[in-house]
Image 1 (spheres, rainbow, N blue to C red):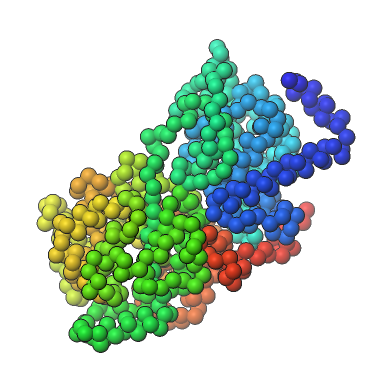
Image 2: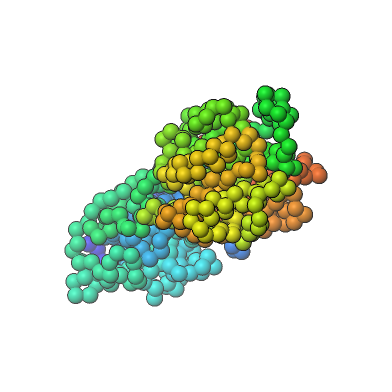
Length: 587
């Protein structure tokens, strides 16, 4: 009830020891909330605030040096949820009325405060920023427009704006990742006119609400993340913002990986025996790229692809790892949200096993027990490159998206001289022409493939003979059909269940001369939605290639996922803080 001006005068007269005690209480609240958010997002619990693993750092972000809190297990989405936690705690500590909004910025939390309480809100935020350094700027400002939130002049500069961006920056122990204003929270000040609070900018639900509108308590996840991801805590809002919107993805989305460990001597011996005709079948004449060692090479890409999933797509429900009875040594098979599936559990005809053909394995994915209707199919050489929402892959009405390449399927029927990828594309084209009388021309990008079980099941029925032949092809064959990576998309399009989409994507051939330069650019900018690191031919210096790829993946994805065993050496190395003198910049 004390006016803001009077309150500031009172605060100035409070003895310094008492002020320090109040700030310490904010520190405790922040530490608890940070640890809770990271744990809820699947990360590891924070170390004590003043340990080497959880301290302030001065780090570089988009060309400028900023203060950030070092948090073990930090992820982009957890940083976003943490910012909402702190903002709401600050407003609640000051007794400031607020309500959360489904805002103008789709993927960022938005909080509304009556414009008449702006001075009080700014005062409380300055106190919070004094203890935990953070930044404030106009909601539409770039990173360079963010200013230190504990300075009065920063607030004077943004008072003409009705919507602000506030953020407490976070970095991981390696300081390779810094989450700044892009993972912040928007704060809107709603002016009152004729007994109604009016939005200072458009949002997706209402333009105004009554001043005395009842407040409802809802989970913060409704505002901090896309529905389906999990966080903790509650928030206040008005009735209009409590219901899901038509643009929300309300159905579960799973992920399926196919993976092989080429270093397994039993698997290698079996592959060689099949290839040479020593397991009952005659030796097979294969294209050079159908079964070369580069196609099966594993550099632990799966570990880093899972890290990318953990970091940038926490809305995934369950990850299914389809293998030939193999399990990575570092994988925690008891972790929530991961299931290992053997080929024997999904192949409709066990006589088709063993197989070393990804087309054959992909033809059986819809047989996975418990798999959701909507899922993403990934090879282990595909990675998420920045925070993504389900809308990149699926429409909210259930339609899936596909991503066409500029590369064209060569003309003519499939031939034994064709590259395996070209022969498969030709076979897919022939089936679509036969069924619908239209001609497909484009290949698909090597991205996550959004799929539906029902479409895959229909393909197995409609193209039974081609499906059976693909299932029984132990290595890539000119008769293969690329069911998951091509036919699904075009068949779904012609039956009204899929549509063309767009994403920012990069493909890097690791054997190319420019591979290192492209990896360096990718790491420097981190501006692609997904990317693929692919081998098609063997590299002349495998050890140098191994070092190049490992260094890149360690730098791009330094934070272990919840799927990794905490007792592994790789996990301990990833979570070890670097010496502070290498990261801090002396003033």
